[in-house]
Length: 167
Image (cartoon, rainbow, N blue to C red; front, side, top):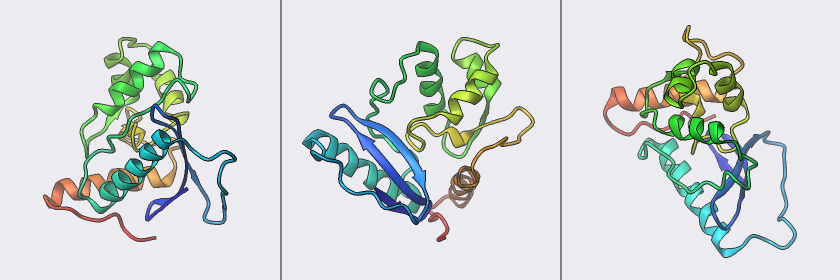
């Protein structure tokens, strides 16, 4: 579990990388997983906590932690390509579902891109908050994703680190 100014997150990792990041309510309590985590998984978890802290402090512009998409259940080539394309969207900028679909090589799959964004196993590492509808709307995007877009834009405009607002 990682507590941040953007919320509480339950994180799962394997020896190969982060498997999942899920935002949960403040009332959720998670105990240790039986058997504990491997040393390699613990390294990924510590790195994620460090990168998230820097990202939310405005001192990092990306969360560069290895992903284990296979363990996360992402076995589809198009889904993997969509997630890679989303990782290439520059900090503080946005792209549309349609543009990500084009960039991923399947220009008629904007709706599928939207669905993949809603199913993303590891937000922050795959910054789906940077993907919006063609009309600029966020759809059913969780409120904290809008706050992340605003956080990035504040940092770009300020030209210096600006921390994510306290809850």
